Image (cartoon, rainbow, N blue to C red; front, side, top):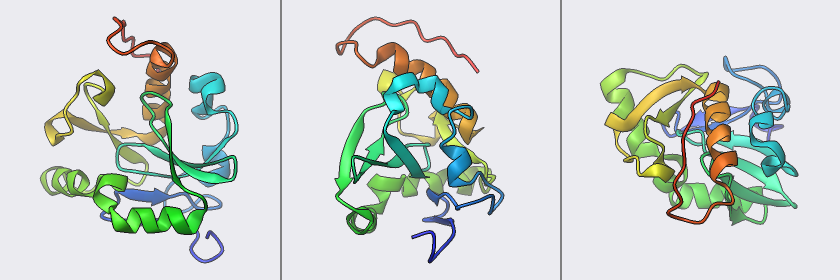
Length: 172
C-alpha cells in the first residue's frame, strides 16, 4: 500500500495512514511503532501488533497475526476488521463513518478549524467511562501524547470486570 501512496489523510482527516518515513508533517510508520514514542504506555497489551493507520479519535488500525484489527486506545481491545488490507479498505469504504469518525471530524473541524497534521481528537471524558461521542466532549491533542494518556487508562482497566470502580490518573 505504501508503494502506491506513501501515507495519506482521507475523509476530512478522519482517516490517517502513516507514511513509510517522515512526511505530510507527521510521524512515519516506523517511528510510530517505536516503544519509546507511546507503546511503552501499554506494556504487553500491544505486543505482536504493527500499527499503520488511525481514526479521528486515535483509534488504531494494526496488523496482528497476519490480519487487520481495530485497536481501541482506551481499553486496548482489538476487533478483527479483515483478513488483509483489501478487506480492511473495503470495510472502511463500506462504513467510513463508523470506521473513521468522519461525521464527528467534519462537525468538529467546521466549528474549530482544520486539525494540525500531528493532532487527533481525544475525549475529555473517555468514551469507555461514559463520555459522549459529541464535539463538546472532544479536544485536539498531539497524537502520541493522547496515546500515552490512554495507555495509562487501558493498563489500569484492561482486566477489570465491567462496572468496577477505578481512579483515573492523567499521566503524561
